[in-house]
Length: 292
Ligand SMILES: *[C@@H]1O[C@H](CO)[C@@H](O)[C@H](O)[C@H]1NC(C)=O
Ligand SMILES: *[C@@H]1O[C@H](CO)[C@@H](O)[C@H](O)[C@H]1NC(C)=O
Ligand SMILES: *[C@@H]1O[C@H](CO)[C@@H](O)[C@H](O)[C@H]1NC(C)=O
Image (cartoon, rainbow, N blue to C red):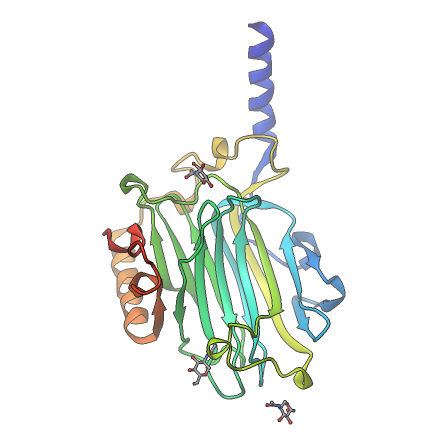
């Protein structure tokens, strides 16, 4: 008995030390927050900017050193200029393991002068297939624009320049799974996906235009940070409700404004929604699609 309770105290103490809340950490130094996890020689940092490059030999990628459970993660991206057909630039969050959770922004390149597509997706407990595709209301190759995830226990928002383009609400009470217990890393990558990315895979990457370069800058991570992973149950600290700003109830005005913006995006920029893709889901469209 005694040994057990001492163990419990130790566990509680360890949990306190494992969690540090970060307030809007910005990336003066990319290397403080991130590390390359694929082809480091194709990633160059220049001041605040990090340039990912893709050529016929390889793409590349990076991930955060820490993992996060709930909060906001934001980065500014300037996508590949000119011919970017066949390429995908990604900014995403993902946990580890076979039943992983993941939130994606994937930017599907195009031939010169034709529009990029931003594809968003969610994996929950290892299952994805929740793609939406949008055009943007600006040319994402000319300037930096901000892309962010705002994740709490009620919903996940995908934002572009702080305008929500997609909301995934927690419908656990109705039996729809929701990511809430696996801490996620923050990732960026650039790779060749010419089997599917551009005009359904019809347009291939033109390697004579390589290297293809996408630039990331101004990372902001305001999230519940866990380090190291695995030593304790992350829900103990990050899961407690009402502790962080992202857990606070949304004021009515904000939610009204958000609904308006989502509708504007939906009506003007949505080009694909898995929820409408009857042909794709033989057993009927996923449950979350027809629950309010
Ligand atoms: C996750 O998926 C596995 C099967 O792959 C299942 O056994 C488990 O219950 C699921 N967990 C949740 C929380 O739905
Ligand atoms: C590329 O341009 C074509 C023609 O405008 C368009 O149909 C397509 O949606 C664009 N984006 C991608 C990624 O294929
Ligand atoms: C590939 O790019 C080069 C250089 O821009 C161009 O001359 C060539 O026509 C392109 N090839 C195709 C198949 O579009």
